[in-house]
Amino acid sequence: MKIISAEFLTGAVSCRQYPDSECPELAFVGRSNVGKSSLINSLLNRKKLVKTSQTPGKTQEINFFKINNDFIFADLPGYGFAKVPQSVQKRWKKMIEDYLLRRKTLLAVIFIIDLRRNASPLDLSLQRWLEACGVEYLLVGTKVDKLSQSEISKQLSKLNVAYFHGSGDKLLAYSSKSSRGRKELWSKIAARIEVHRNKKIPLRD
Image (cartoon, rainbow, N blue to C red; front, side, top):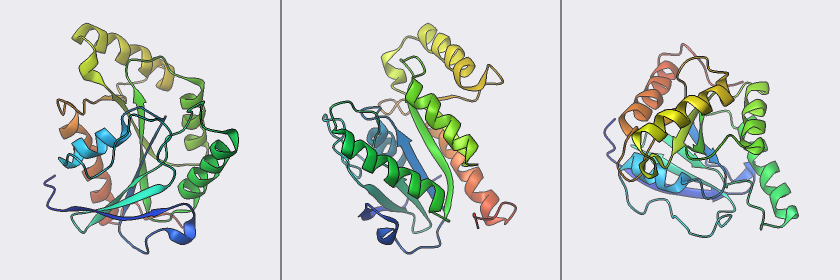
């Protein structure tokens, strides 16, 4: 997909602050420091549209970006960073859950994990929650450039078993540095938007 324009719309901490838009929306979610902001910048071929930080837990709101004046990316706060106070973690949890359950224009979640790591209880818990709530998601493993080809194959196999019980090759490997997986992820996103446009799958009631 050719990206003509990408702009920041607004930040929000509650549903009252979400942008008033009928455009289809895709949300990006993952643990703190998983490389979520870098992935979005890479996907959009922009260097600094989404601010990256070396300090996990810095993003404290949902940031919305309008793409091609046609659809929206929502960057959700990272979760699971131990140094963030528990009260803040609870607030983020509610913010994320409210968004995922109540945002009617949400098409799917880009669920990001670190391909180098074993499946964490937090990530597996989020996956179960998404499936239980009927929220569609695409699982993407980042930081592929930090692994050898044999390590990539090993981790893909192991994580596909952990998340999908080995049924098919559902985990997409991605590198924000080399853009490996960029074409494949865009293909999945574009297909989901096209299905919505053809009204085969309506937005949620």
